[in-house]
Image (cartoon, rainbow, N blue to C red; front, side):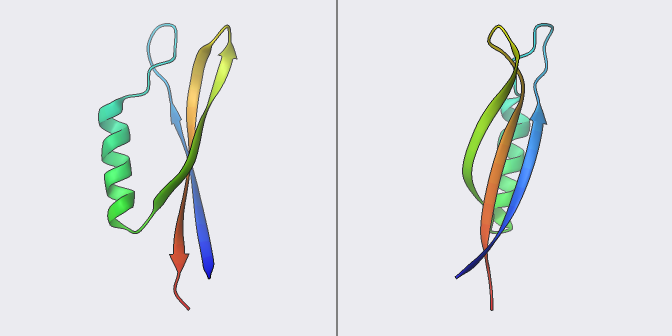
Length: 65
């Protein structure tokens, strides 16, 4: 079985950082899901002091053939 991968970086907003728009995240995941992409893992990067700079999302889907 062969796979292809997609990595997406979503920036956090807010004055202090740390807020990912759940509406944008849900729309992105539904769009990619309809194209056959499955979320494998995600993690946050930080400025330090616990403030999130962005979220990194890694998706995969099977390659036919």
